[in-house]
Image (tube, one colour):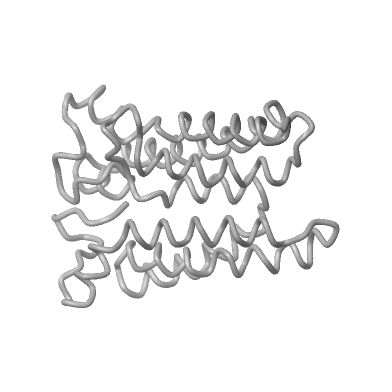
Length: 215
């Protein structure tokens, strides 16, 4: 029974940390506006970039990545107790991203989870970072669409995670990490469903366009 309680505590704490939507916080604190009223209506880095500029976008990105790292480290190091630290970490990963997407503090309207996913996966298995970031950079450079890079990198994430654990952490079963990152990937792709529709119609916004589109 005790491990189940620890897992639940990790989930709740991670969700509450993830619900700290820094795009909303920064836009309200410094601009007295809600980022969700502009562009894509999303509380992520790209909408911040298109709406308020580079500095608030970078700050949002760093904070969203950071909260994912904090949620995972807190779960593994302080809240896990006698439960499996790996399971605690990946539970925290999933729930911090759910918090980012559906923040309890902001009427459950948040971002698309890309930056927070980067934080949690880097904290859990840093080797996944270059594996997902290299195709992201290439795709965005070629297409000028951050949304497309995010979707494809999300799809790559569980595959990358499986092989990272297979080769770098053979003492750990890759099942929990792979399943958890597959859930994360599906959540991110789901949150990009309007972007996918626009891409199909050839209407997706690109870098340099005035209208906001992503995260």
